[in-house]
Figure: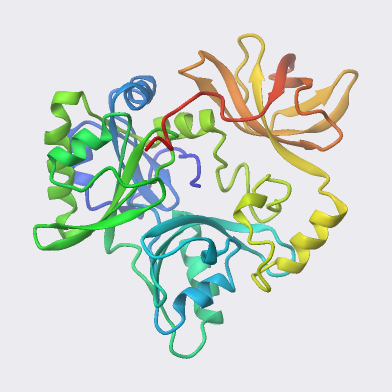
Length: 375
């Protein structure tokens, strides 16, 4: 999920309910999906390492929030988005995809929170929230209401091996299973506490009404002081997710990339009778995709960046880098790439790094071992 931050923000960007806290902490800001969000505070590497070794807190309030409510709301969502809500029940979250009905391309990747049969909360990416909302509104049957709550809630991600200790000290329930959520009462307001995240570490995401967002942030930061909690920006979020091989919408996946190409078939309910794009992706699965999303790791000191070409020797073009960064954990360049399916999954390839042919190995992510699913 999520897009890479771009250059300096404009004055027309949306701001998080926590913006004042970020300014007080000296955050550097960047444009992110139409929002002005913190890119870093103390530094990307330091923030990255805090999450891998202890705990960090992120503001990801730019994420969308769409509520689908009414009789059969879950059935409606199940007939539109790719994954099968029948695999889970109330109190669980699920990664799913909004696909183009004709091509099967990925319009967005989304987390769905299954409250009950008549109430589903969807969390799309910031840049795609309106598009997903409009598609759902256009398709909703009578009696099913689709409401855009994009600016009404804040989302805080508390990630790292010490996240349970921090949240418990702040008064929140912890210890529930991966991809499950509970509702907590915070100063009279409901806060969803879910075992999800985009870092690959054990952690939680808190969805809180904007009216209590500052208080929730302050409570978590105060509780985390003894554990060395660091506020973390979207720069560290990007390096952390790349180490896990989590795809990024707008780079690794998008409307021209299908679930088969992205190796996201596990997020498709293949046995469901309907969902947007079903015919296209089933047909492609049967004939075989021509591209695949892979991980790449440098054998030297080179750092890959998006759009760098990838080839075999001699000069057989395979595809291009979609995401690339320096891995603070591995201390080498890693990335994601869309390449032809003719190349083996462990092949050595050449990446054109500013005119130099640098050797990389194709690998299966994740690049690091983490605690994301530990009970």
